[in-house]
Image (cartoon, rainbow, N blue to C red):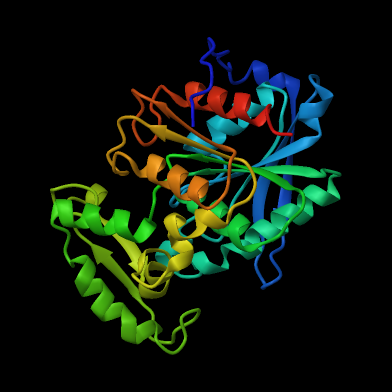
Length: 311
């Protein structure tokens, strides 16, 4: 778990460096009546070995491939010579707010992404998740034997999505409380967790801050909340899944993360190692917050240097 050597990062200049990258919109067909979009990036030049591997980037909560860390990291890695496909899943674009964003069905989205990778001729794939996307990728690799997948890279990886949310709501005095939502949600999803007839939208005040202002609120449906944040969602618990991952793992954490507790990355690395994975890297960007403000290039460089070491 020793850190990678820190070199001086090469900063991408969007709009200038991008001219060395070809971009193509792609569509994922999970096979359950949905379709999602993504962006495939191919460097025009560079190391042929790097260009033969595809890095699939999975977004965080309510994110997508066009914003934030996933977008910056995707273009940065393409600038380092890797082919990258940054994808949406059913959890993006308000899927968790208005229904359909069921966490336990996200493996269908990643299987569809692997199909796209195969169709474009890639025989080696690394999964890279950001925040909630770390849990999506970990759950997928832990429970699906896909021979093309050769590595897992996570950025701002929580041990447990349900526990992280419970502690955050407790810290800010959320209304309703975590326990109250459990009590309301359980009978709604008991008989039909995927499409309960009584599902409805609910809001939470002070979910992300101490004041009852709109920016501190959250919106869910009971089914989407239960699937990804409920107390009976083992697929949303990386601490329950990472011990089953047998490919090399890189866990890259933020040193000033207000959403993830100190030591969560170390705990995940220890679980993986104790389960027999002898290729686990843990590293940190000390000054970074959860969204890596002004630090995206640094964490992308760490990811790129680790990806270059994959066999």
